[in-house]
Image 1 (cartoon, rainbow, N blue to C red):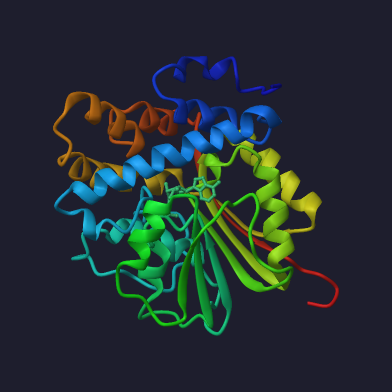
Image 2 (cartoon, rainbow, N blue to C red):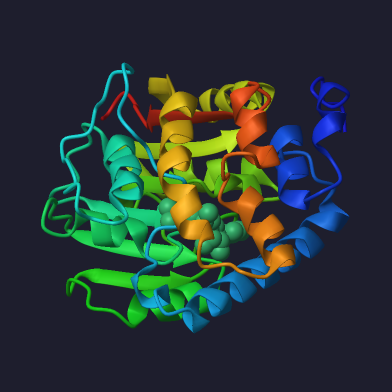
Length: 295
Ligand SMILES: C[S@@+](CC[C@H](N)C(=O)[O-])C[C@H]1O[C@@H](n2cnc3c(N)ncnc32)[C@H](O)[C@@H]1O
């Protein structure tokens, strides 16, 4: 792997594989390790979802993202969540990602839908023609199917790198805080382009090393996407972690579990949080359009 950030980021290695994945970027996993990586990821998320299922509040845990808190950065969200929502910051991140994409009457696919964050956030505010949530975790999909959804909302187990969707069958692809999990991210980007109709929207956000975003952007543009929005929202996400992570951490009492979860939730003091503070990791939000001469 030829990654210019590697030496600089040695300091971050060792404790948890996720952090390693984030700082190194993930588009150049060797083919023979890619499938094993994916199986491992699936195992982690199945276990995580089962754990949430055992907790008292688990049935309300729809949102798995770090969240977003408004500061001086320009905001594009058209919806403001109620402050009383305990998951208001995570909802806010979803509305920022959607930004000025109309969604109404459009066919939307949410790749790595997790426990239904986007499906919950859009209800009552947007009326997509159809919504399909796809996730690698069967536990997550079972959870999504188990709570009340709009009739035109569906959930399927599936892999971001190989979407079981027809060419040019969707208007919007949403991908929130998940792409760092994909061993062959280039395959995912090609799939996004393939399933989008001309004029379609790819609404994308994640936490990665700055150099990984540069490579991803180049790749997306080489595939044919046009970038229409690119925002560094690390400071907004850190503010959300300040507010939210400690509260989420309170449910974990076992010390090993607390250490694992602190990084997972980017709790203040965790390595993930420090890496964001120091600029080794950056949370970026993009809109890409599939603009063709016919669209
Ligand atoms: C941090 S969660 C984010 C979930 C959701 N987008 C949200 O905002 O709450 C990352 C999700 O990516 C999913 N995932 C990981 N690898 C995947 C893959 N190859 N294909 C589809 N989903 C995947 C995991 O199962 C998990 O639900």
